[in-house]
Amino acid sequence: MNRLRILFYVPSQTFADPNHKELTERLVLCLSDRIDVQLVVSTDKKTSTAPADYDLIHIFGCWSISACQLARKAYVQHTPYLLTPLGALQPWEGERHRRTPLYKRQRIVTEKAAAVQVCGQLEQTTFLKLNWNQRVALIKNPVLTSLTTFEEAANQLLLLYRKVLDSYARVILDDSTRQLIGNLLQVGLDDEALDDADRRQALIAVLSSLSDEEWRRISLYASEEGISLIIEAAVKRLGLDKPMVDVTQIDRFKGSTTYSTNNLRGDILLSRNLLLRNKVKETFAEHGATEQSVSLQLLNLHYELSHHAAPLLHLANLYHTMRYTDMDEDMIRDMARDLDILDFAERLMAVMHHFLGLTEGFMPFNSRDDKQARQLTAAFTKFDMYPV
Image: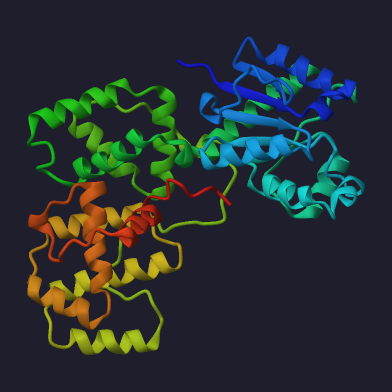
């Protein structure tokens, strides 16, 4: 199993303080036997600070242009970063920088940090009052207090790193694993998805090569999106055993968004919009029950997306509907047009084709593959959605 790769990044003005220098250097010594940790001072140009070279970046100190640049690059490249302000965000420190261009940049860096580690109760209290980031962990500084040791602080940091990586599982999935999830969803939903023997063997080979860490991230993501049972069914269909990951026992920072764990509804309309309800009633009056149910699924999916409440499970449910429901395609297209969701339905076909493998023979709508369809894919998968 690969060891965790952590970058300690310390601005030169921070490292010049003997207390901060001792803290970072001794933490590196305590951590080095368990993870790969690299200490880099901003003036050191010989050591790589490329975010892709690390699993997580730990920035010590504030008010540094180079640290802000590194944090921004890490965020864009989906490498989580942790910030330890070392007291530099206390009110009196913030006031000194309030009218400088760096103040806004530091705030953005702090807000987007995967977590902020404070070193004392006072610092925690004053930091939380800023309301810049609520993902806060208190780990005392062994340089300044006898209440903890460097070994204890290192142990707490390891737990915090684990919590950050588990909280950001969806964001740090690589492109091949993201598409693998789509492939597994199709296999779990579609009885004929494994008719191609070469494809079956290719999937088995990829799954057999996954590390425990990769399975952990897939399991966390699947749990958040309500697709765990489908993934498990796919693995079983492939004749493999999936590592057991009890996601309920994994400590994570909780996001503010929660999704329905039930299947996509095709029997009631979720929207309370009176105009839409009247239009649905009018449209449904002369059409079949099957087409009504499919239309309700489309309408409900559209409603959930507009409220940022659509789990990937519901796209999978729609795939199953498209794949196994006999419907009058002319009728369902007319209904979608009358309900003003035809464009949406056509883009859904492109989403399901590219991510879930839905083929043209099972599409009641033309596939519209454009920029908005790609935005729909991002909205459903949420691979690039940072927890807030």
